[in-house]
Length: 262
Image (cartoon, rainbow, N blue to C red; front, top):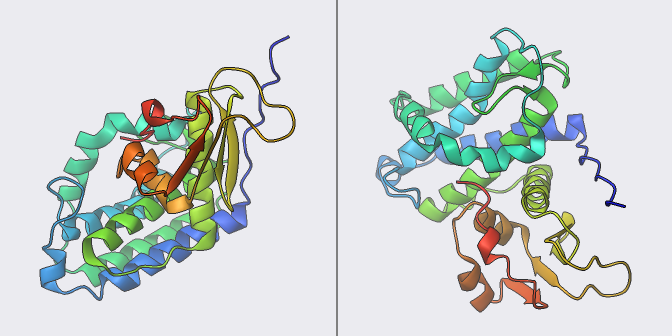
């Protein structure tokens, strides 16, 4: 008998909505305090400056505001767990859209983005379908993807500026869980247990399934190291050498499965 199909993880709507707003406000406070020299500085994202990154962070919310103004799609086309793997196809269009944003007045841009977002989401059900670059999704699912964008790019902003922007706990939790589930979807199985305390535990990779006791193949890391691995901000061997990742068992090498997002 084939193993029973796992039920998709559920996310609390109120917590997810609150997390998106909280993390955007954290970023807004940090960005509006940056000096012109800091904004013109480099990031680890290719040719993007900090100003480009700041612009993209507004697009994370502004894109949803625009999508909610469009007609509702006829049917759902993309499951939440498939979103991370789909993102690799959109790098060029995201770069183009980001560079088109007017960043002459960042405080005004952030204020306007937030106001339009809150207005657009008022009284809209999580079941409402919204178009995305990769296919129509439930609004509730799309909001979870916003936590990934915000948390990952908050980490980029901190790396570029040393701003030490805080991570909302619920946003970091949702981001960690979605990227863990994407790994399990990419490499289904039960041979390896991946632990990212305190937010996620998943089993993945084909092979003998663990049923009781200590699993023979275990990977453990912290949430920020995990999101950096999952998005290609760092490499498996580097984090293993730095003891930010522990991996035991002959199947516990995930380097061939990472990154998950482009």
